[in-house]
Image (cartoon, rainbow, N blue to C red; front, side, top):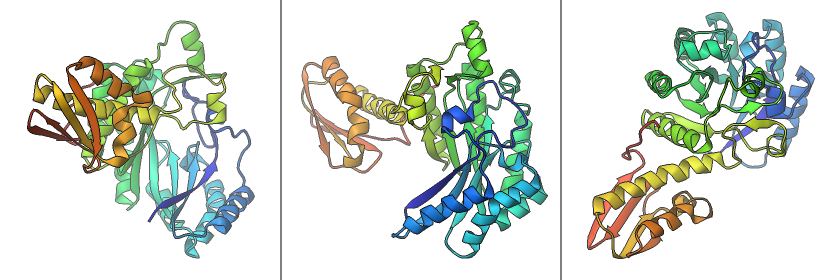
Length: 351
């Protein structure tokens, strides 16, 4: 059954710290606080328009929900809880800080229909967390994840490669710690310099250099594949495109691209194809890359970039594409032989 997400934005609500990178109001385009009446109105509007069977979730985005006073949490959840108990909502999801979780609160959340909690981990390197002014440690993330699991609630984590102080080693550390938790879902947001954040000041002073787009794509691809291999569903790579982000002035620097997720998939499929080309050796004559129809754009690359590159690299080969394989699988027919690779098998290394 397809999912239908009802978004409820609470920008900065509950956050006890000003992290160097954060400006939720510019990310979400929402500048006012959400009230229980707003929650009810938004739920009513969406639920009234659903005419097909969906798995319907109400999702609180943009703040640290469990850091809000308990009375405020209960008031905001009340409209969703009523719809959940009435059978109109299948679940509620929310995001929060790792140092704002306790067992008592988790019991109340589960009773209100919360089935997924996403922890804003960002990094598992204490030095990086400190430089980013997160106000918590890597151990706090691990402890919070365990509490969420013990409460019978699904676990999500959010990671931000490219934070101040990040290195190849710290990124590997973050990835290894994330894999050990085996989260149900993950979001990967390469760090951007947003206007009106402390990170803007560091960047303007030359004290912070964001990842280049190409590097961010490669790092995110490595993380995405590794997480997928332990059963984690990576539900977002890069900030979702919006008018606020796409019309200059909000993103000052960093690897923002409205099609970032597609670039990551292009990178993965390019790596898969390169493994097959190398296995086949020198290419000449008719060469066919078999793929799934749903993977066509991922394989070709934006504006056919991958395909054009391969044709330049192998001028003696006539490279064609044929959509007759399973999703996530490539098969190369060349010189009377077939070579095959899946996205679970492709080897990527952290740049």
